[in-house]
Image (cartoon, rainbow, N blue to C red; front, side, top):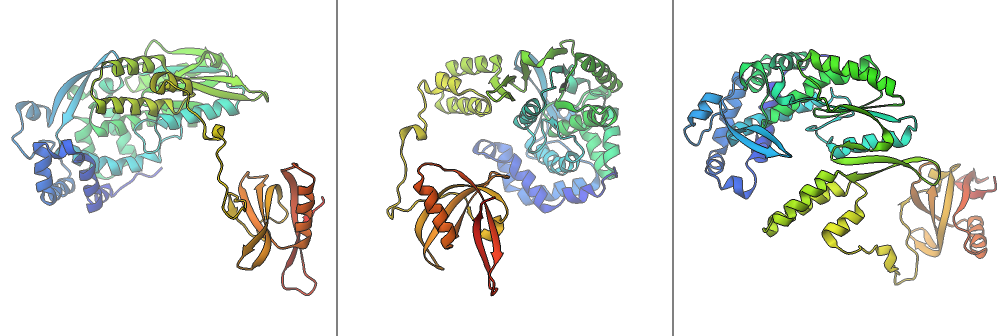
Length: 463
């Protein structure tokens, strides 16, 4: 694939710089900070500085609204922050808002060029490809292929902390030929000392990590070795197959590729049967056979996710924080089969379906209303349709006493409706209705031209 050029010209477009500014300096809290107030007051001046820095091919990550601290000068613009999350201790690199605006302006354009180079089944920090999109891909493949019987699941040990910066720059040079952009990307990549590790907390690191694994793992597995069921979410990987032997052979390939870029696989990797349940992306996904003998899937939230939410909800006192926690949990649970869980934890009562109440709308004119697009009869000639209902005596701009017919296309499942004034079609519809509740009825509409021209005669075929 050809390398991309003239990227800096896309980055310095005024619309892109404005969008980057608005995406960072947003929300009341940020706008009321000292730096937020300074940036808003000097918006045009600051964006012109950013433009000139990009055109020069070198960025500064130091703040503008105050003197930088000794830590920021020593580290090249960031302060370190240690957090504990899910039993892990991580060191984040925190940048000022001015630096984040520059990084966002650059990565918005760079990510757009990188996305078309990723395989379809890789996710995390890719636009329109989050964890739920990848979960849907996995469930679709489980349903459609009954020979998918085993999983191989693996995770890369301390991925961001152990990335070799030279490998990232090599991958970037294979994609881009814009020397100014490559110089700026090298600033992002080489922030950490000793040539090892990329920043945790910097937006550019997500794209750099995805590109590194896409170049050295994803395309090797898909293109060279033809592995059909491969999924990756950041540094977590999953491969499916019909046999364990194939997965153990694939494991050797994965280890070879990961070790070639100076990384290692965690020892908790495993090969296991699909019936055991796939613990991935915060869900546990299992197959089952429905009443028609077809494989289907159902999913539950991971136990740790539920426990963490309940513990946090029990401690929180702020109503605003409580709403945030519930919204976050609901955002996860709605993508799984968790109706009873939501009832137990949140509402504590059974939700009533509207259909169970038996409430319906009756138009004042007594006429039926049908859903679906209105179509011409000529558009559905020679197509098999299901006739579900009809209404007599409908007035249209073309005249009164028309019949409105509701139907569904057999091939596409799409609903529609059409008007007819054909005496033959009206007679057949009345005869069907006289037989009682026999809907839906399969039918095919045919057409033949009138002898004197000037149109077509439409009728239901007996074939």
